[in-house]
Length: 135
Image (cartoon, rainbow, N blue to C red; front, side):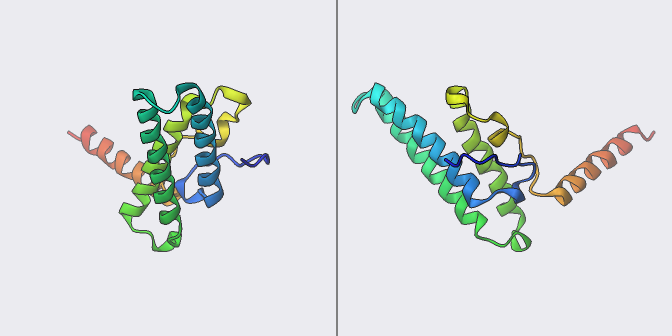
């Protein structure tokens, strides 16, 4: 993992390959540490193998989605980036208390792909509120 301070991410469009690789590496580092305690056999070992495959698949999907130019991304790609990042960071979350890991680097909750998505979302909420208030 890189030691340089990372900016706090607010929107999914700010994600970079380095962000994904660093979080993936952090997950693998923690899983490898536990693997020595769990061993090669048993239910916990199988569960850790499944979690390791999940981390690999999630990070791989994110990296694939990030290859698309942000201007060319369609809605499902934008939603998938937000969802996969949230899932990957939620997987890493229980390990965050270890080794003085920087909480703010990964755990800013991303709800939108970009500022325009967020403004449109807030506009839809405001319009719904106004309709509910009208007699």
